Image: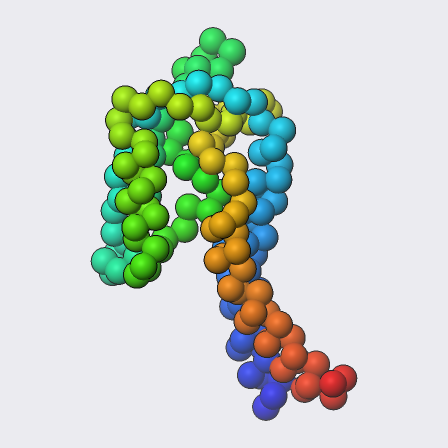
Length: 149
């Protein structure tokens, strides 16, 4: 029975940890080598998810890389939704990047269609680490089920 409880906690939290933490951290780390390019914001807004409680941010911008025009809507690698008190941070991003704003973005030289405005892994990275707690709890249950601890 303990084994089943461990799986119920461990499997979803593992996927959650990968999606919300590990993958964005790896992308942020990889983007450290991307080229800084000037870009211009064409649209920025907050919008609600399907159930209306989660808020997403969208910052669309255009840039030119090696003579080719591109556009992207990726603000950061931690673009997940926020719920509750964190809405304000999304609104601050939109206020910082109104349409027409000239800023910089970071372009992947291997695939210029990929660009991001913010390569920072923190502070959103710390909040995205919540799944790690569930992974630890699930692992503890799993170890207990196999009588390792």
